[in-house]
Length: 400
Image (cartoon, rainbow, N blue to C red; front, top):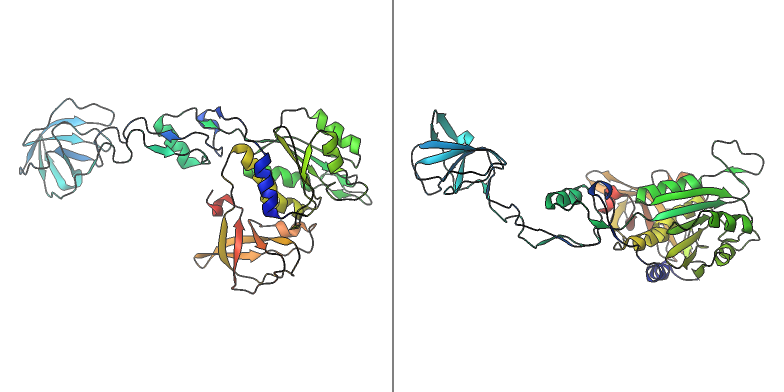
């Protein structure tokens, strides 16, 4: 049985990045940039006013100035400012030749064609050419995930078709004769299928595309036929259930029958020990143990890592060290445990609250979960106030 760290290393070694493609700026939010982006010109490209006011020569100490023109944003000024002269100017407008300071309109009195300053200070109130960036400066590096700020910068740079990784395409199959649709009242021995909803939500939160999803029974030929019928236009296959060694746990056999090479069959993880990972060419597959808490933990610790590799994104493992606001009731275990938790602001600082779960089938333990507490093998409970490592999952708290 391998460790989680070893499993993540195997995933990184065997999953190849998808091909980047130029994509309209309106469609790349959340995607990973695959090229460095540099400024094609100085930023700003010209000296411009930082205020509404009057452009003058900084060394000109005249008591009053004749207004020789007006400059609005977007206009190229044709005049040149001489001693005793000024130009009415607005925020963002280009500074005219000869001028080197803007007197704020709050510090100026206007009387017809004359302006009299009431106050002069040392500040020029000019944003000078190239003060933000110089031509050829790299402003965005390959590997960054594009959020609102990055998108706005790309727009400013005129990059309307950035090369990005496509969203990984995922197909998902939930196995088990006992599963019913959530809208259907379960009969004797049946349960509602929650894993399909859970997987769909996790993929949506991450930004992957769920292109096909269905429930299958506990028959090898049913699953292999269903996967084959889904076609080949996908990047990752997720199978819920069938990961263990029971008579009806046929996940590994299904992958082998479909031509996948299996890289590991279980990891030293709680919950989620019987996790199977395999590849077929540039496609990857996971068979996930059937309980929902196992789904949640293995998605964030292993499946998500494979999706990052497909996107050629740097591995995301944002650990914080936070104080517990409730006791962690974990018992020592030979496996590395990842305990669902909720991180929130409390008294001006982030604090972590371990969530209660009785077993890996107890979905109540995922309500509010936006973090996992890694617990090393052999380690156990922790008291209120203790500082513990916290793996942040929420985009609001992990800085992604």
